[in-house]
Length: 221
Image 1 (cartoon, rainbow, N blue to C red):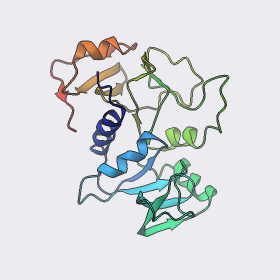
Image 2 (cartoon, helix red, strand yellow; image 1 turned 45 degrees about the horizontal axis):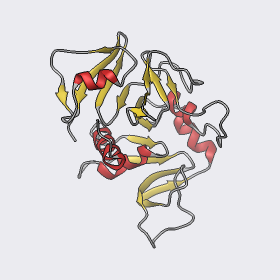
Image 3 (spheres, helix red, strand yellow; image 1 turned 180 degrees about the vertical axis):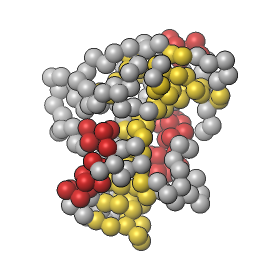
Image 4 (cartoon, rainbow, N blue to C red; image 1 turned 90 degrees about the horizontal axis):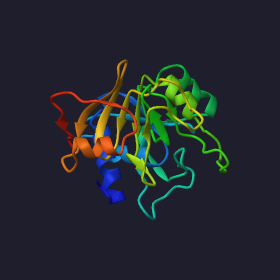
């Protein structure tokens, strides 16, 4: 088990970045997914969208160089590339709902065997709102979940989500610090595992049933 939180997040972000393809429009959700932008391969052109009204978002702003007018959807200070542009929320969500976002990368509280996603509320706890999560998972062409494999020691990849759903059957890929899992019509296919873990360990912290192929790759991170 990888216990170092910073290392775990780095592993996840690096692996997700390898899923991106040149020329794509990509939306990164708040939290861990924002780290993905740090690991885009050199020479690859990816356009990042922030749902609060920006296309062409650049890296996180360096300390002392923050512009209070430039923030991402999570409230972090960011930069904008020379080709970047700004617009209102209606235009931003027209891009999302119109199917123009190639990939969205989101965190999750729970994901299950059917590709159902719960990532916006824990009943009884105060939250600011679901944001654009429902729109993103329904509007993006590919939905990648980037999350720690467990939460407070409990599995987050379940047979069936217990929390209120964000969307049904919309998740395509799950990337954790331990493995890469593809959501298929037959269930959850274990595609890759981290070099410092084992299939048995992954099964022990995963409630959902995993399809285990004969040849499983080592995660490229």
